[in-house]
Image (cartoon, rainbow, N blue to C red):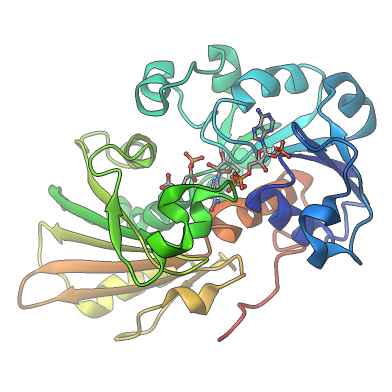
Length: 345
Ligand SMILES: NC(=O)C1=CN([C@@H]2O[C@H](COP(=O)(O)OP(=O)(O)OC[C@H]3O[C@@H](n4cnc5c(N)ncnc54)[C@H](OP(=O)(O)O)[C@@H]3O)[C@@H](O)[C@H]2O)C=CC1
Ligand SMILES: CC(=O)N[C@@H](CCC(=O)OP(=O)(O)O)C(=O)O
């Protein structure tokens, strides 16, 4: 099988190259650019010198559809809206890492992303690729809206509880933090060294584009869910997301019943690991891997649940989950190319 990576020179694209290099079923992948046609991919990433000799090609949809079977869109929001419908109508499978295909309601996308939405019929065909939750529909999909990084950590953290326990829906608070690679490779003031190093900053307060994505997914569990409280912080680290989630169940629970619930829910999911009592994951414990590690506790004194969910934003939060979805669509081992353990320290 042959793959194309559009936006290969970005962090998500480069992570796809790293994964596909060790993927048994993708025999060949080609890399595409909007700004560096003819240059070698390894000129952007010398560390991949021995891995690939590929030249960056122009994004020519007709040529791409003759040459490959699956296309990964690792482009900024607004690009897939234009390109994916053309690629998809030529019969290729598309996995989009951007936010462009995640919303069924065009108005929601246009309000939060301030860009023109994809055509309705394309959005209807897109499957939200949160693998552990939507595996059954991913199997038959040809078009994947790969989830955002914060939504992946948040939804995996909250889903088992909302599905099985009555929770005061107004009590849910999501406090999330990310490393700077979440913002991509493009230079920006906010992610320059002096602004990030030895600093801790809240950003996009009340207006983060992942708010409606989390709401859309969690409303499938409980349609009564109202607006969620979700804020994001930039942490002086390269990779990693931690979502700390607080909420109050309506009835008393025990620490054991809570843990049993999570362990049962994720018992067949290789990439979600639920920690033992009193053990909370840190971002370095999933660094460079496709795992989502979850720690949970019920405070019998206050009656509140705390959930700590960590991922590597470029792996489970982007390229890793994209390949996990491809594996599910191909009907092969879901972890193909993804079993690398975290890099530590
Ligand atoms: N970074 C992360 O942790 C995550 C990112 N995402 C999403 O994945 C997508 C890729 O993110 P990331 O790799 O971090 O972003 P980067 O900014 O690192 O890379 C995006 C790439 O897109 C290409 N690009 C830019 N403009 C255009 C254009 N007009 N047409 C075609 N290609 C273009 C650029 O390559 P070139 O100039 O060579 O064309 C660039 O290298 C984004 O939508 C992002 O929001 C999702 C989850 C997590
Ligand atoms: C640290 C940082 O800046 N992270 C980015 C993640 C962007 C992203 O992944 O955007 P889409 O999911 O919308 O494509 C942010 O918070 O906007």
